Length: 392
Image (cartoon, rainbow, N blue to C red; front, side):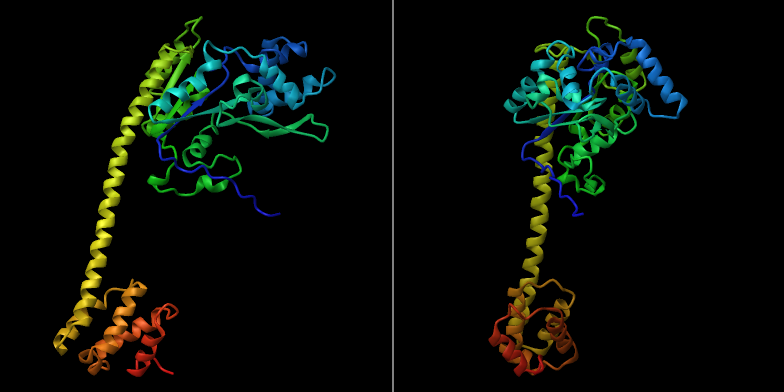
């Protein structure tokens, strides 16, 4: 089977901010499965989760795999658990205030500030349900990382295709960082120089509500990014966010209200503005570094050309030997410089008369041995043969 080639998201000229969201109780007030699906199989929500967690505990099973299996089992005899059915359930989930307009609103604001904002979902919920929401259908998310099903030939959920839990959520942050967004792209493990990183962690914002988001929050925090805990704006229960900020898991907490002018809106806009200024300063650093590097290269090339000129114009044995001594440590000649060195050997009588001296002969034979003559003038090659540097 031919290996698939995955697209690599390239680094943008403008700074890019990735805002990563959990879904349940971050964008929606309740678990997505409890907003239609569980009721449709005539189950009490509390009993469903109790049985699902018991299944996981009794079988050393991941809790997310347990609920996915439970959903397949309970749908039998009631309806076909298809992708379309799950998307229909997703279309009906409740959202926190302002969520429906949030994503485009923030992108527009960022664009005004010269920044690109991309929205990502990293959730233990079901990808198919999230894809059924109006904002997902409208293309709000750059990528949705969530648990999903493999479907049989009839289109019915058969086996987990992907499971996302609190421990493996962090891998998706690395994918976003490097632009290797496909879950099967193993370039996520490759080294990328800092200047080629598409979205550094310091340009990431992670928004979540609970302990399952802690690994991602901690990772983003550790590298200068922004972790935000949200709580239900109606219940106003801040116990979780107090605990997370006291333990250094999050930097900020706000109500899960996404309306324009709200606390979260103001905070995100402040981060966008700060990032824009920070990126300006960092770009200046990299520009200065590049200029200095180019200058170093230019000075080096000038030095090589100056040494070639000294050899070409040498008018005494001592001057020729001195020039050869200085030239022999250089190994990265370009074709134009090689032409000049060969021309010196055949046109400068001073050099030609001592061409068989040990140091001179060794220098030229090294050049001839290690460089290709394809791009060297034919006449020069013939002259080198004439002075005995090339045989045949």
